[in-house]
Length: 251
Image (tube, rainbow, N blue to C red):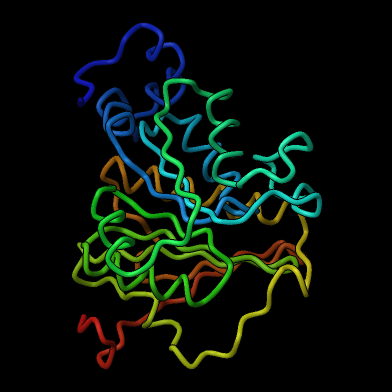
C-alpha cells in the first residue's frame, strides 16, 4: 500500500533530506514508495544498499547467489565476520533491518535469467547494477531497455571506477551496448587484479546518489555520459557516450 503522508518518526528520521529543496517532503514520499532492484551485494552493492536503506527507499530487492567469504570483508562493508558463509543477499538484508527496520527487503539468492529477470525488473522502479561481469551487465541492459526502466551501472578495479546512467525513458539516452560490444575482451576481476576498499565505497555512493535523484524525478547528468574516477591521481573525468545507430535497441 502506498504511503500518502509521513508520520512523526519518518519526519524526524529523514529531516535532513526533507530540508533540501532538491528533495523536500514530496521527494521523500516518492522514495518511501519506490522499489529498487540491486544486483550484486559485494563491494558496490554494500554502500548502495546501505545508503538507499538509510535514505528511505521503501522497498529493496537484493539479488546475489554468492556467499560471504573472509576475503570479502576488506571492502564489502554490509557484511561482517559473524555472517561468513551466509548468502550475501541474506546477509545484506540483516544489516538493512538493523539500520532501518521500516525498509521492506526481498532476498533473491539465485541467478536471475531471461523471463524471470525481465519480470523482476518490471516490478521495480530502478535497477542498480553492482555486478562484476559483462554477461550480467549486458543481460541487465537488455532487460531494462525492454522494461523501460532506468539502470545505474557502476564498475571498479584496482583504484579506478566508472559510472553511467542508462534511461530508456529518455530519447537521447544511449545504452550499455552503445559503450561496450558483446565481443569486448574478458574483463579484469577484483579477484585477479585487486581493488582498494574505499574506491568501491566512492563508486557505490555515487551510484546511490544517482539512483535517489532518478527516483525523485531529477534527470541524471550522467545520461549519455561516462564518469571515470582515478583514485590514484584523484581525478574525475566525464566522457560523452554517443548513441550507436547500429545498436540492437535502435535508439
